[in-house]
Length: 390
Image (cartoon, rainbow, N blue to C red; front, side, top):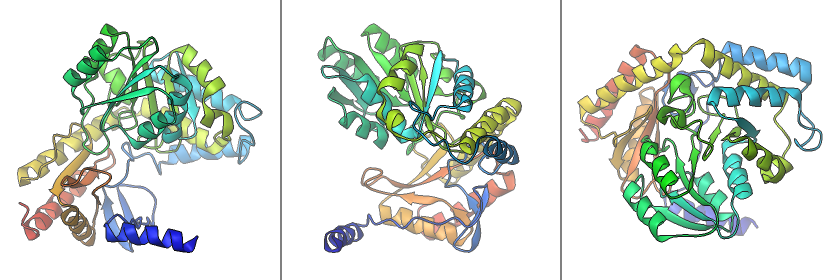
């Protein structure tokens, strides 16, 4: 066993794919500590700055004291508590949908919903840059899969026109794409789906809490949240700052998932403190809508600063702001140099992104101050000049 694993680890190292995760030594904040150094944090998905917020911690403690440490069962046996269903009603109200159901994570939400929904003979049309959890979820189904070029509505139309079936036709796309920061053209995709009798499935992991009124998501941003033929799936671990996943949509969808979604059926439900913190996040988003405004103000300022230096941010439309370096070695070296200078931003290369498109992915949050962003921009300027990239 050790020999087998050792060979695989050696291969990963030789190909430059071996990962050693950075370890945070302080809470997830705009400024944290990595490798003994205080750093400005541009590596997390903590969009609204809620991960260490006192209100979420207070709500988590309240639920812990009232309900205990764990739920003790799967949802369908003895693991559904009133606090689960109360939060799901709150979530459906926030999303503007008929229902919502919470699963263990965003990854398992995609597996569970796709697995429950799709049958042999169904057709799936999937964006080529969809998240790995969508790809894995589709692989577990017996539906026929067709991949369309990224955000290419003309190619999607071509596939819809040439592929037919008596089964369900499902168009699957991220709402916000996690590596490039661009937004799916739902304003074109949803009408096209209606034309061809298809259902639209949106993984809104990076849109929930970011886009739309009060951060209600990409679907809400485009005004399709009340359409029963649009399914929303997302995580509760990014802007919501805790953990979990959910599906929101028609009331019948929730009923189907309760009966058919395997992660829901075979995994213990969320413990009380997790749900308490999620309730706290939803309350805070409602009470402090200015957090969304601050997130976008910071995003615009940061993008303008990088563009002014001559960096390529790859057309990002959201707080996800990649800086293109091309070769992985350059991105990783720039990331190392940034960290030395007090900026925590992680280099990303193949296979997470295509060869030749290695980048540093920066995520601005509502919690960053203008002084912190100025420091980051100045540091990028120094590193870019040293590497002769600008």
